[in-house]
Structure formats: structure tokens, C-alpha cells
Length: 173
Image 1: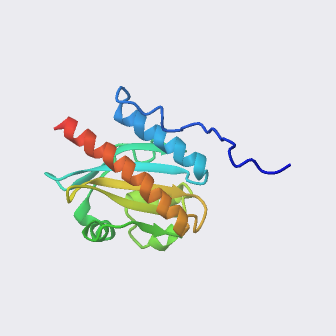
Image 2 (image 1 turned 135 degrees about the vertical axis):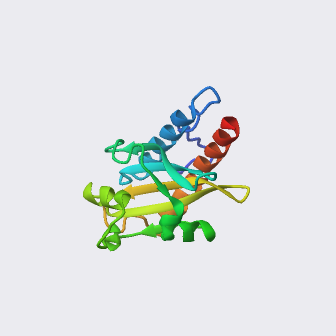
Image 3 (image 1 turned 90 degrees about the vertical axis):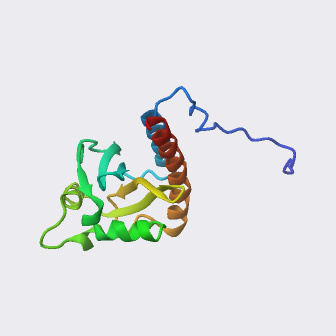
């Protein structure tokens, strides 16, 4: 039997459930579920909002194994040089082995993640019109989980979350 070039394929659109009537958090958690369908090894997603008036990054929403891990956590951005550097030259940072962060005085957020067995991370600043809105964190328990093609896909996904955060920031002001 010859291949039929006129054949059709139908797929479920995983994004069609995104509608204006859903809350910001519902949208973000749905997007995370869709991301995990593509990359099931992404064990944790977290979003921290940047408060320009105080300089703090504060936990906004989280999904994964233990959503209470850093619930209510906040930190001054100026106290985290690696994140400041990332914001100054926007891009993404992939860390294949988070144990490299082990120092004598490990920041609380890094210690908590390492203590839960997370080993790889992808971090992306959320920007809008040149201003920082927040930071996106993806974590995996597998060493060197985020390959270059995966990081590229996660960046595209992150920009969708970024747009939702920008929209939420406009509504909240």
C-alpha cells in the first residue's frame, strides 16, 4: 500500500483550555502540566515576582513535588550575584549539577532545593519592556537534565509565562 500524501492527522491542542476567564495561577499551572507532558523529568517549576520598590524577589507560584518548599520565601536580588548577572545580560542559565553551589553558607533557597534532591536547573529572567518582572526556575532531579534543544523549548515556554506575568502585572497595577 502506497503512502497517501493527502491523509490527515488530528491532534489535541493542549493550549485550548487557556481562556481569559481562567486565573493567572490556573494558566501557569496548566502550562506547567503541558510542559511536563513534553519533558516529564522537570520535577519543579517556580515563579518569583520582582518588587522593584523593595528589590525583593518573592515566591509567587510553584508546582511540583513539594509546593510548600519555599512558600512565602523572599530574598533581596542584590544578595544573589548570579541572578543579578543573569538579569543584566538577559538569557537563560542552565546548571547541570546544582551541587556546585555548595559553599560554607549556602543560601536558604539553594539548600532547600538540594535537600529535596534537585540537581539540575534552568533559570530565566521574566522581562517586559526592559524591566524585570520576576524569575522563572525549572528544576530536575536528574543531573545534566536540560539539553540545548530542551533549553530552547523551555525558553519559548518561559516567554509564554512571561507574557502572562506581564499581563498580570498590568492588571494588578
